[in-house]
Length: 318
Image (cartoon, rainbow, N blue to C red; front, side):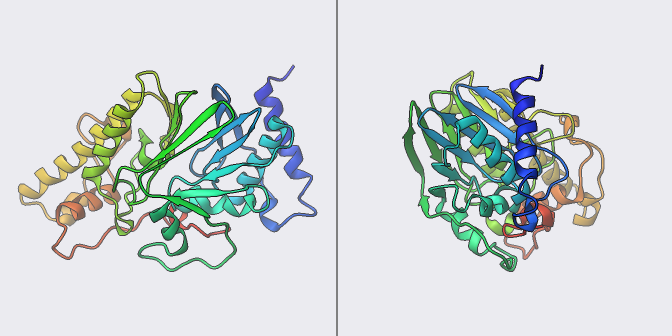
């Protein structure tokens, strides 16, 4: 007999597959996403893109991030299966990048409200350093500056912004009673991160923001990560947050040491050894080294190293 998770995954694929003939082109998908329960009606959904968090209780449904449209459609179908057909009371976007918000369009007519930090909402409409993408989109209709908090049934949900980090509009979403927090892309678990300097990223302050998240939560809080390295989990503990904050500081320290040793940017970007003490992130890349170099050289006219297009295009329907 299949487990509930297997049943939901299969049901989701069937529900969405049945819509192929009558839905928009992006309703087609070739692989099914996976629902995983975490604790007290909170779980996560993985498909393609940043991890989706969700809450389904007797009084409503809340979703954090939306991946891409085809996987958002799968997620919606599965949540309807779990909730008995309830609409989504609130969709929250942790930041503006396409692998977290392109699926918003699938929530049109499904989500009653959409919330994001005020900077993230602005960046969705005009991505810094890039042209706005053509195409339809569902944008946040509610924003916050530092803290937002609301009750949904027996759960309190809190969104907090602590300043520049992965972008300048990142939010941490906490399910207070479940003791689960969605970090968005504030944590890349054992994987080199995207550092969106045109959108205000700061590696130095990013480490501080992750430290603040640890301090703001309980010792046994379960954290949902935006991304993880191959074979690594997308959920973890405060220890994983501390490890990532250590990586960010070590990256800056390493590049600073190379600069002080007289090496050029090109020479530094060519280094492929793992970062000392952080072998689990894999070999260093020109991308993270170049952005660390750029942050240390701010004010000298240094240009940011572009991030992967697939990660950033907020309105891409592909």
